[in-house]
Amino acid sequence: MRRKHFWILFPLFLFGLAITFNSMPAFGKGKTPPPAAKTSIPQVKLTAPSSPELQNYLGIEINSEFNLSQIRTKLILIEILNTFCPDCQKNAPQMNRVFNIVENDADLKSDIKLIGIAAGNDASHIEPFIKEFKIKFPVFPDPDNKIHELLGGAGPPSVILADIHGKVLFVHEGVLEDIDFLLEQIREGHKQL
Image (cartoon, rainbow, N blue to C red; front, side, top):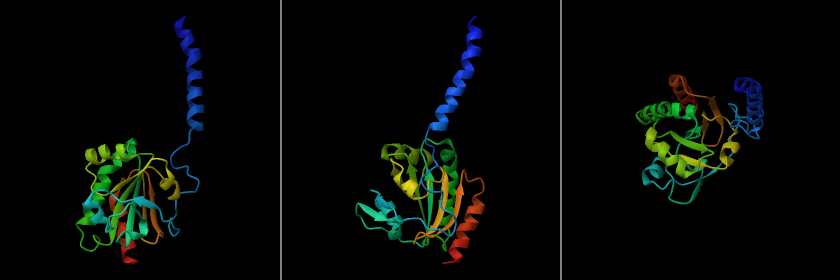
């Protein structure tokens, strides 16, 4: 008898799940579409990292807030992530490899900086993520997704390559399976400077 009830209730359960997930707001469905190449992203305010090493990496003065345009660089690679997202966790080693390659390339090192925007995460979520995945670039909390939406709502995970004035040169949504292609886009953007 119980088996019969299961087969009657199970489809109703699945139907309820489908309705619930379809009605939930999803990442990547921001108010504006993800930025496309040749468009511009708005200047967003970020809180300066407390670490002197990260402040030095970004070339910013010690103060409470700064704009992307204040980072001393020519190109900025922005990773949109969420610390609980399995694909973002899978992406972390790839982004670490990109960071290491850029930092060890004399031509790119001073002209390209990487940052992370942790969509839906506060600082308490970011610290364990940074430690577990040994992230070396600054990751900024975005608990209410305001920065994420200003950047177009792409991902997570996603990567946006822009010049310091906000002109978008390249966008990639999803896990970085081929970092060589991303590095090619970075080098191409660097040549255009």
